[in-house]
Length: 437
Ligand code: UDX
Image 1 (tube, rainbow, N blue to C red):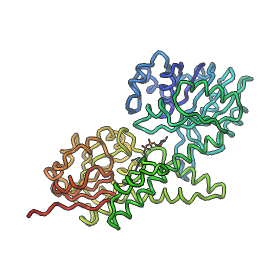
Image 2 (tube, protein in one colour):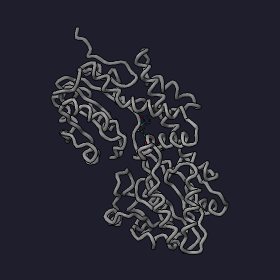
Image 3 (cartoon, rainbow, N blue to C red):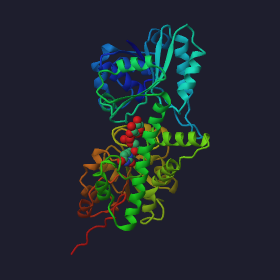
Image 4 (cartoon, helix red, strand yellow):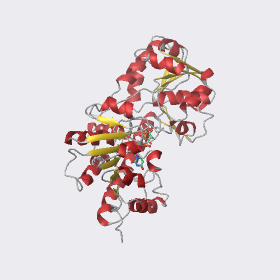
């Protein structure tokens, strides 16, 4: 089978490389010539653990090109993995998906299954089918399938090779049979359903996870008031298989390319159809407020940040990625700068992307110690292993005023007590330095 993949972002490239790993010949198409040149050398243009190695291993089955006509002409299956970013009103921007659909319609010269992996609003694939059929340059059959992607950044390769499930949404038998053949060597439960259900599975799954995080964050905030400990609370909840023990980590809110976008898109879709998903609307609101949680706590110690040296550990929306989309750092750091703080920041891979999104006067440090030096307060926005593994005594040794506000609950409270620092996290009691006898 000839397989082509449109778009070489997280979804497209990881899909292409993992299909090659399972023995398929795959042509990956991108409009960006420079990116294509890099990939031809076996280098991944995105930071994703394990992807470079897998690319190199499968280079003989992988082709990278900007020549979409040649790539689509002879393809049996074409995956669309281009972005569907958020529009100002919260709806999904489908420009890139339609652009690729039009190119495919104009290029294919044999019957072909077009597989939409991009996250699109429910009903979009029906429209794509009509759009493509009206534009076919040759008398061929084209089937549109929905095959949503559930990979998370940082674990994208594993999430694809060992997928929790493979959802195939089709309206006829033939594309379903072809896609089952494509995925036959993937060891994952496969669900064959209709297209609209497949599209909904993606949104419902992502939004449920976002909901779970916002719920746990609200419980965490309440724990602080009533004197409970969120770590124990979620541990206790997680023993119940109906609740599950994952995605119960309280923190400073979710970011990333999916949860913020997909919650807003589903909420928009519901209201457009005169419905309202109140739970999702609430999850969005809770998350927006949660991102400012540490700043509220900081006001206990300082009225504002004017003239203070603020140390920031972690810029990305989570560890294991250089992605900053919707990261809590992006809303917090501008507040420090606006107040007139001296901001020092450390992140192992996110600095380059941060500079593109925030042009304030920030000192980017090479090490955590350098960042903490003489700081009046420290904010932790990302639970990088380097941060979690830090000896807490370093805070007291380096900082002028060792006040640590941790948005990711990186440390045990007892250790922070012994380290002689002021330590506040999410959903746990505040730690003050132990009194000397
Ligand atoms: C997510 C989904 O996990 C994935 O299935 C989907 O295909 C795309 O969206 P991703 O955005 O890459 O993946 O990262 P994920 O690990 O899910 O984390 C998203 C955000 O939620 C991060 O900011 C993370 O810090 C936060 N989070 C996650 C929590 O605050 N608590 C948790 O318990 C889990």
